[in-house]
Image 1: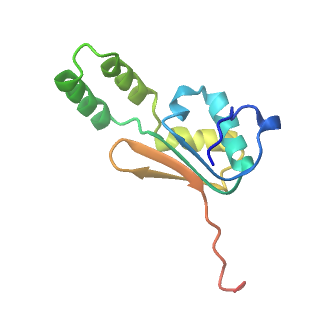
Image 2: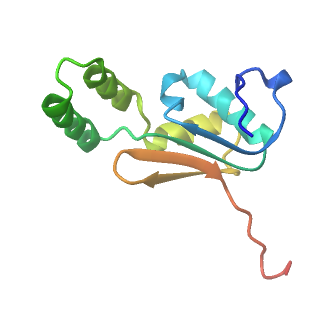
Length: 130
């Protein structure tokens, strides 16, 4: 079952086993991003995956070349480049996670060129507790 709700309506948002977002976070202000991460952390029971654009020079310039070749006079050529510039570095996401007070529970990873994602840190059992 797929449900659509506003992530910012926390009072009316149930908890879910998994939560996903794709190319959403770069549309948020810094304060809204920290609030979003806190809500996702609190409302996902098992895990979450927040995928977005990594702000990297290579991604930006490669996209600009692609857009010039294939997206003539398209809004997507302009919008895609702006989205990459609004994307994140690992440092940006670390700061947002810190502002949300979630340094110990979120993991930042880069995937492929131009992609960055957040997920819950998996707690492993130490040898003493096994």
